[in-house]
Length: 188
Image 1 (tube, one colour):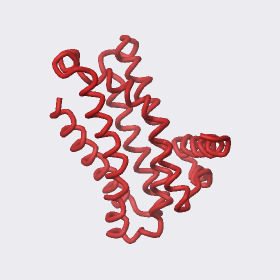
Image 2 (cartoon, one colour):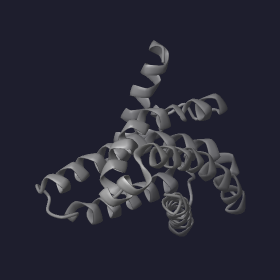
Image 3 (spheres, one colour):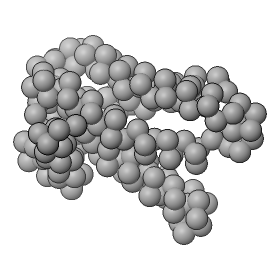
Image 4 (cartoon, helix red, strand yellow):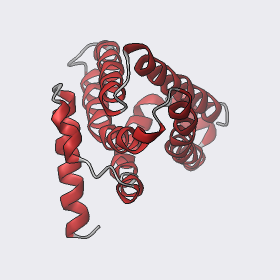
């Protein structure tokens, strides 16, 4: 990525952190145009190493030994790409259904960039749990709820919609993520 791309990423991550603090002005930090939408998928590349770290914590030793690292990494990488592509496709339909298609880019750009700090937090909690600092998986439940609230807030303000429509979007994301994860996990 060139200097302009890094500058955009820094600004977008600033926006993501502002949204995490409940500052709706964070939306102004994102390029919510069509081009900005496509560039927001750079967040997937930035978050991918964090995903791999999380993968080492999520997959059991027995699964690594039985299936081998290469197979697991390939399957999970394909699942990662599918998740990054499937959710926007589903959101095209959902935003039309809730009469917010005109705000699709507003939501998707913010959503994509917000995956980076979420992934970083999951790694920190995972390392804390694995090291015993947070207890056995103690922080995951709290972090999961915090991420759901964060995504609800992003949907609520970026789509300028009501409580229930934003909740629907969070549930769609959750169901899609669980489905993709379960299918991937069944392949090794």
